[in-house]
Image (tube, rainbow, N blue to C red; front, side, top):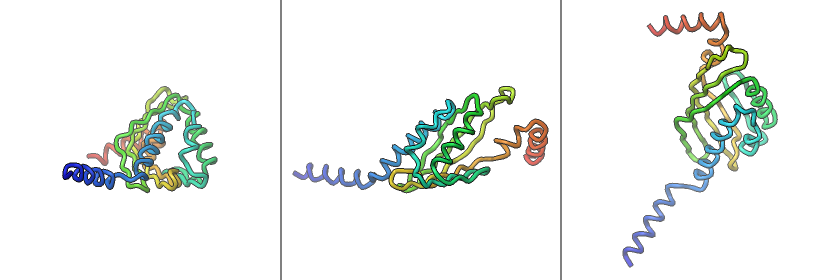
Length: 164
């Protein structure tokens, strides 16, 4: 009988460490990762179910209100690339917030086949198993300015000088 009681207590402790919200957020984070990995093919259909209608998205270049506007923006952006891959390094889930650390590797059309690699992170706020706030953090210079032919070489030289 003591053994059975001990097992029940262990089960209670195990359940206390994981809430249904964090389990569903883990599913949401996994679904978001899959959706982002399919964006390179221009497939934005997997994004719709992940975001709330009133989502606010922000990155160093844009602020976008609403799911329809966000999906349209992603469609515009990713239709201009030959390939785009994400490697997700870490996922942190607090129950109502998700943090993703990632590397994006893309090849834009008309850029001579040059590969652009950007390190970044996403901070997401979740309500009712939908993302209602999405903030991406990345170096806009590495993503845009360093890939403009004349400007890029100047910025890269400045960075080299600053590095020592």
